Amino acid sequence: MSSLRKTSLAILLVISITSLPLLAYAQNSTTHNPTWWDKYQYVSNNAFTVGGAATTSLSYGSNVDVSNECGPQSETFITLNQSRAKMLAAGSNEIFRLPMRGYFSSNAGSSWGGVDLPLPPPIGANGVDFGSDPTLAFDSRGNLFYGYIVVFFSNGTGINGTEMAVARSTDGGQTYSTVTYFSQEGGTNHFNDKPMITADTNPNSPFRDNVYIAWDAAAGGSTSGGLRVATSTDHGATFTVTRADDPSGPGRLIGASPAVGTNGELYVAWNDYAANTIAFNRSLDGGKTWQQQRVVAPKSIPFDIGIPAESFRGALVYPVLDVDRSNGPHRGRIYCSWMDKNGVGATDIFLSYSDNKGQTWSKPSPVTDQFGYPVDRFDHWMSVDAATGDVNFSFYDTRNQQGDYEGLVSYGGISYPVWTDSRRQLATSTGCSRNLAMEEVFSAKVR
Image (cartoon, rainbow, N blue to C red; front, side, top):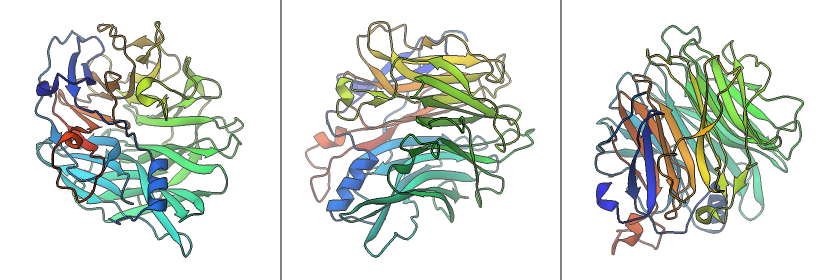
């Protein structure tokens, strides 16, 4: 990444909340910012293909092209197998193809392979479906779970509905032998959106290897929507769905983020944009029941904000939740981060933590105070290293336009960010048969 310092899209990593971060750059000059709605519009009208102490310096490896494919990628996600720390898995949303794309590496991200995720049969004679919103997690047995939404539509007549999907791989993401579909939603203003998945890998947890996936069941503000959490106790074969937010509330929320505590506690945070807060709840019985909804912090941006780099869609406010599972002094601490406006009106990444299982939270503080650059920071991710307890962040800023979301996973003092940029769009020849936006998935090793 050091060879790209002349460009102006930043990916920033902070190793521990008290460290001095290192700024590194990734190239991008496109204004294309695809979403699953762009994907729907494209495949509706075009041919498609099925398929603690301050850290003063960091070292980072070469940028690796994870996807290495024609066409734009977006909504990247990455995870790591803690029992085999060189085994990584990632996912992306391909705009010009129907399936979700999965990526796998067995050599700590030095090289990657790719695979398509399964899709169910379409609905109706002229139906088509596609996948979107990837999210991945390993359990303690090495099973990999890839969650996504399936969007059903008829060519020329609009969306018929959505449903949740969780595919399982037993070989690190090279193949996905089984997939479970559930929670189909249809009708006007009813759809599933933005799922996030996690698994209980704690060796002493009574719910070890439970798989949890959380999402918002958008329903036009009616009480039939809300924040859903599905639990699997049989390695992804079946899922039981509960509601984690106030069941009598308006259900106006987005960005569910689940995490598992050191004793099997299930936590989830989300953006409650009706109340304009970052909300939180917990389950102490493996996702069967939920306690009273709590507030992490109020905020100033309800849903999204049209900053220069996201002027069309807007930069979305969503929390990222993680737990310190190390044997360090903050074991069990819950961390929650999100984007909001700072004191000069720009967007920044804020962090709060709880040492009493989410009952009370610290005053939010920005994670980038050391820099002071007059830019917006957004589309972040956070990962707490389960071996060291370090709290790591990655995000974009507005020194140039970027891709759609990005991801981060950390373990054993090494972080692997994953993001999209368009450096290959600038190449004289990409090897592609048509003029596609070359928004590729990249990663790098940072320690």
